[in-house]
Image (cartoon, rainbow, N blue to C red; front, side):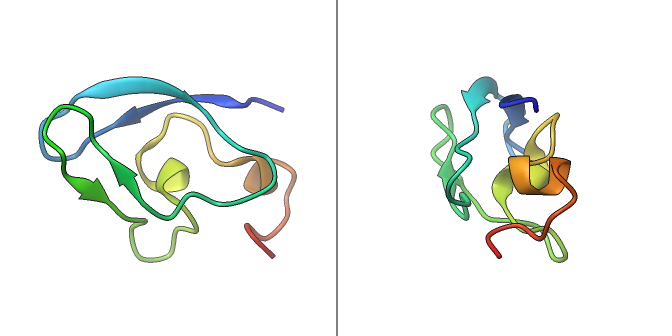
Length: 67
């Protein structure tokens, strides 16, 4: 299980390494550089699946995210 991901802001391209929680989903994430509020893309369960280099822990386990 990989818990660290590099999240990239689609607006300003700022990148930051984050540790993903294993017990809840992250639906909103504020870019620390441009303050854009990121939300999951259609069809994705969380911001890590949409903007991270690694999918969230439930998806890595082959489960539904947050379900």
